[in-house]
Image (cartoon, rainbow, N blue to C red; front, side):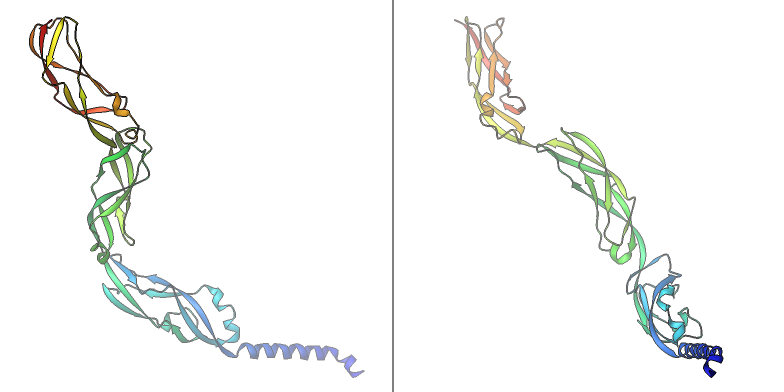
Length: 302
């Protein structure tokens, strides 16, 4: 009967006790780890950090339990002042006062507690380019010569990296071609890691030639003269230096079709004469040199 009349007071007491428990437990100091990203400021534009810089710092914090809830979800950042950096080794202490938390938090430990930064000066140096060809050419086409314009580019980066560079590669992709000639493509400068190239691209000119195989053949000259003309030739042998595309050179019997003919005009007077001869070559075979280039003949009558 008494409980029935005072149930409101019982409920109020229960609510007050729960609130008091929550407040007491929330003010209980506990520790937790939080990860803060490192945010750089004041970095000199003429310097570069080679190594030693960490992306985050771990902080052990002591605070009332209620304040530590969701600490890692606040996207906190540790501000690292780099304005005093100089070339060489720089030791930077990670200081608790740079942790962006209020007075209710106590920073107990930081990992790492310091950073050892290896810093180098940024320089610019002109370096000659070296053309590297990429892609495939038809079987009988080759690059006889290639040139770059400009022939050198400026590389920017750490002085220790620049000191190791004697030349920089330019990647030029060979275009799709079917015959020899001159072509121009855009080559991409490929600097070593940590360096920047200016300009990033150059013009690459290519002189495309034909892959050939040379062969020397000897032929007896065929004499073509009127029946009433007597022709005397000291030597009928002609040595021919021929060239043929590499892929065609493997054709069996190709050079059997080579012929040399001397045509004696009907109106030629008796006596000694120097005459040119005719050369018959298969398609795709051309003459590089001939010895002799003319023939000396003596004309008489029968």
